[in-house]
Image (cartoon, rainbow, N blue to C red; front, side, top):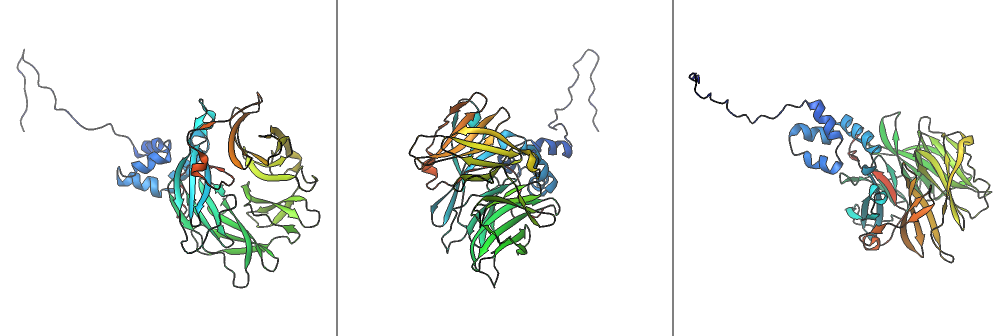
Length: 389
């Protein structure tokens, strides 16, 4: 071994340069990666095998990223679904934060398209069910598509087949069941003999399980249910009074009960819709001048129904108008969806100052979406429809 020496009064030889980087523990790397958007994480999978395994296959990392995304407005997106041809579903997307941040300019980007069944015409006419970044889209009365547009993965669910039954209509609701620690899809179907059935499919399996017949004295609607507080909630018609009724299915015991709501005695023909705002079950009702928003502050407690606000209708007389609140920000700004003269519109309503702004959309929504159905808000996540949790 050669030793470098320096004589007194001479110049000392500097140590050789090093290219080594500061060491970061894998736990610290995990914490850093959890803060990143899904798009960046997908790009970082190629760095090394351990990062790819963490991002693609580690369920604990996926769930931690989900929790952080839920509280981050920049990870919330508005998507529009459109069926341009008989066999191709298009999804277009825009960040929720772009609607609330000045200047009020946003754009929609086509994020994905699916052609899941090439030998039949598809029917995507109903509202999409969303949960934890995944979307469940009805194809027809016996089948549905499950996808996550953030990671661009999808699967066709097993067909809802009963040799003794033919299904006239079905709706599909995506939920997370904490009792089994897995995702499930609940179908509510009407059969040709008039029965209403509830079937459940668990992610990772290849079959549906019938759990019970739906109460007979209700007429079904096409929209999927609302998943909240370990329940699935459907807004249906009572077959005698024609009143709109909330029927709630408990995920733990798989039993149904009726939930009272403040608009139960409204006259027939009143437009009522069910939704979720601020993690509360809510009801939208529509009149000529206002859309009222009611929320159930404590789920299951009918005394906790509260009128949150009244939103002015967006339009003039003589045109069909539908108004729905899609999102409420921390400072009271609301993203609103409505129809005016047959066209889809978005607006930001300030409930505190009672002001309304129509955001400038750089690209024409109608160029992206030829047939617009009710838009929904979803969260970008790593949760895969191909995995079991």
